[in-house]
Length: 314
Ligand SMILES: O=C(O)CCC(=O)C(=O)O
Image 1 (cartoon, rainbow, N blue to C red):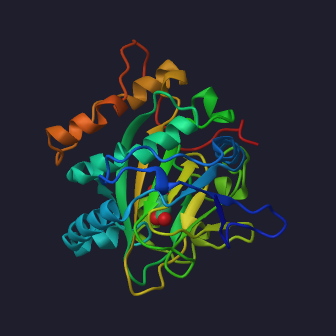
Image 2 (image 1 turned 60 degrees about the vertical axis):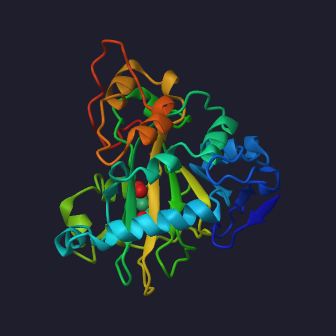
């Protein structure tokens, strides 16, 4: 079962199909339903490795979607104006450790079954954020999120770290859908040099609206989705989001997984497995994600944090 999405194509390039989950074979209890069979996992894997991203349609059921909308709206309503001003370009950056509902999403059976289908037998999870673009807010800057560029594996095809993005509303270029540069996880693009480290306070604040980090590029690929679809991407992939020109919030929850944690170098595993606090989670939430928490018991020094790719990225 495939759905081809308009917009996931730049001129002269092949379309990208959404791989659909077959809900007819699932149980009825909301988040404890049986894993949903994926159509053609090898195709999903090939897209992820070659293009740096892939899509799984219709992963979240209406129950969890509605509970996530309710919780994120409450959290967003409580944000201060000062915080909003600091993050005009990104939108909110609320840590998912503030509320136990996000543990349900981290350990969601559908997400687990996608990871298994991609050959990730012992995936790990590190962190996540509620990123909400307010109505009438500017574009997000071009960036990539990999911080381990000092590790030689960064210049090889298999992804070290993946984003799982769940948009809570349907998205289009009008309300701030994701856009990305296909293949930029493995090939240098001029944006790597124009905006070497995009995670600066100035870019977050949108201090200079004419900065090249916000520009539209001819080769960018729009990724419009339906609420509840899952966008998977390699953390090395250059991506950004359109301005939200609508009168409604556009919220995404981004979760960060390590699909092949056991295959990573000691230095990366040491860096990933640092203890983390989830101050708003109860015991049930911690238990849900227990097998996804990375552990490293060796003696290697953690790989130093470096978000700028080296010369090996050509
Ligand atoms: O806001 C978006 O659509 C994208 C968020 C993003 O770039 C990220 O989580 O790294």
